[in-house]
Length: 290
Image 1 (tube, rainbow, N blue to C red):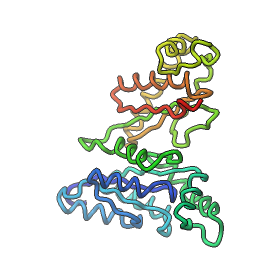
Image 2: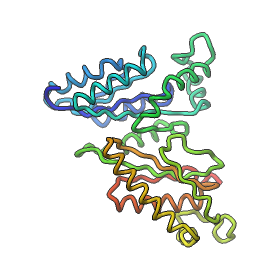
Image 3: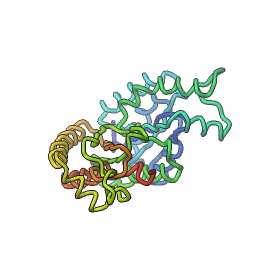
C-alpha cells in the first residue's frame, strides 16, 4: 500500500443485532463509514484511503450476508489486508433468537435469508453462515438486552479513545448462572466453590460491592489463592492477546445469583488487571435482579 495505512474496523454479525447503530456510533466519532460493502472491496477501499495521505485515517465497513460468498470473501479480504500491513478489527453483533424475532416483527421486514420459509428459519441459516466469523471476531457484543443508547455507549467506550495504538481492553462481567452465561464471554470463571453470603442473614440484603460482603468472600479458604493464580493466568493471556493483535477480551465471572461472590471477584480482578496496565471496564449484569 502507498501512503498512510488507515485503521479499519469491520462490523458484521446477525441481521437485527444493531450493525447500523454500531456503524452510526463510529460515524459520530468521525470514522469514515461504508455500509453493505462487499468483502472483496475491503482491500481496494483501504488502498484508496492510503493514497489520500491521512485524510481518511479510520474506516468502518459494515459487511454481512447480503453479499454473496460472504464467508470466503471476508477471510480472503482480511488476509489480503494483513499482507499489506493493515490489521483490521472485526466487531461481531450478536443477539438471541427471541430478541431478533421481536425486532424483525416490529419493523415488519423479512429476514434476508428467510426466503419462502419462516423468520426463525432465516435466523438459523444466518447463524450457521456466521459461525466461523463469530469465532474469529476480535469483539463480540451481545445486544439482546441493550437499547440503542446502551449499544452506542458500548461502542464509544471501545472506540472513543483514538490517541495512539489501541491497547488491550478487558471487560469483566459478573453474572448469575441461574440467568445464563453471557454469550459474548471469551473466558468464563466459576466462583461457586466459595461459600454463599446469601445464607448469612446480615449479608443477604447486601451486594458484593459492600465491604462486609467483600471481606467475607475474600476471607474464605482458597479465595486469595484463586485470585492470585487466575490473575497470573490472565496476565499471560493478555500478553499473548496483545502479541496476536487482539484488542478486546471479555471475562465473565459467575456465582449462583450474580449478587455477592461474582460481584466481589469481578471488582478484585479489575483492580489487579488495572495494576498490570490494562484498560478494564466492569459490568454487573444481574445485580438487582433478585
